[in-house]
Image 1: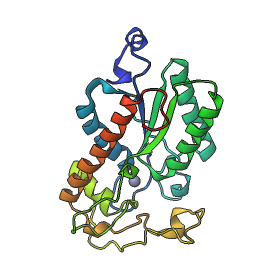
Image 2 (image 1 turned 60 degrees about the vertical axis):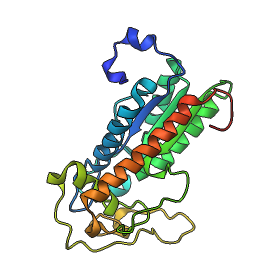
Image 3 (image 1 turned 120 degrees about the vertical axis):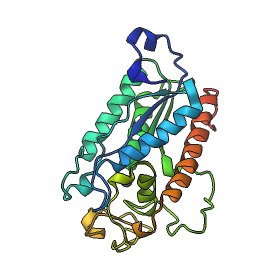
Image 4 (image 1 turned 135 degrees about the vertical axis):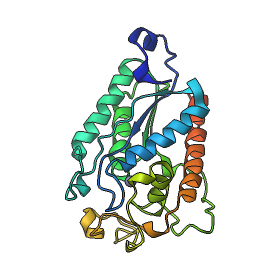
Length: 252
Ligand SMILES: [Zn+2]
């Protein structure tokens, strides 16, 4: 069920136990070979597939394409809300949904720069509504929802998500091959930001002159299809936990 397609009286009759999922993504540089809307297109495809499986089990808000991408702003075309602005916008969205009575709110994320503000947004909202019972506020990033180590087929080069990398390039090859540029001459870029296990503040150009992070040369459409199926399965399984939550238990 899609919030954007309901009229307000119909929205008013919905069960307030229905999970509301707000897909959040970005419009930012994705190297010299992928379009600026990559994160939004990939998350939209995961959502499209998950919606087919979940039916009316959740209420989907429209995908919110403006993300926190200030670290990519030196690359032309990137559009971004500053981190604090973005945190406030997510907080407002949560407040809107809570005002309407909804109790299960999931920020389903498809962009690395949104992870920290989205987690902070749900954390702060829980403090604002500390007297409420039966409130479930969640940040969930689609490529981080595996419950255990992921068994990747041997043809994969990367073992984790990068940026405009083998994984994202493969998925774009699967859904929009006409928008994928040449990859053969792209140099691999290390996935690590440096100074692990601490977290370094970084600009994209600290790590990559071209904008990609990872190894896009090994991308292939079949890998993209495999990733979409795995990520969709993870998202569906996760949202089913939210749907079946009893409204009280700590675990779900
Ligand atoms: Zn991306």
